Amino acid sequence: MAKTRKYYVVWQGQHPGVYNNWDDCKEQVEGYSDAKYKAFESREAAEEAYANGYEQYIQKNPTPRMVFEKMMKEKTPVIGRPINNSLAVDAACSGNPGDMEYRGVYTATGQEIFRVGPMPKGTNNVGEFLALVHGLALLKQKNCQIPIYSDSRNAISWVKNKKCKTLLERLPENEPIFDLIARAEKWLQENTYTTPIYKWETSAWGEIPADFGRK
Image (cartoon, rainbow, N blue to C red):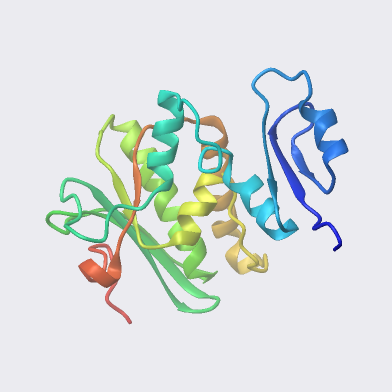
């Protein structure tokens, strides 16, 4: 019976990456202090694990930073209620692409804290990303220690990876949007934050308070 090929993820080693054989992986981790690596059954699973980080795949003596990062990645429980003392962000787009806008509101009351747009030739995903970064920057600026909710898994993932992975075509009409994207990515690269980011569970709680009500 043919031996199943395995793929090896090296999160911490000489040259982190995904390797298709043990010998190459071994070169990266042997003798490397606190190396982090693991085997997977498929390249797809390995690449996903590499992108996600080692914390959820290697369970041993987590540091306080690891615990915090894990908390940031996990969604809040569906059972129960959201935290009212929080900021909720959302976006809306009339068309795809179309006129895009986004805002943040105080969850408990729905009071609008910030609003940007509408801006032409944008997408909802881009608006969700910009809204989340805008909220993070504002909370840090105000030294406000409350969590932030978004109903967009894409936006949360993009913020985590510090990159807006949009396929939106860059046009003269939407240059202001791309300027905001560049500023948001720069902020993520240059700043740290302690604000917990939670996924708003629409199926359990209804529409996020920042929703524009245009569905």
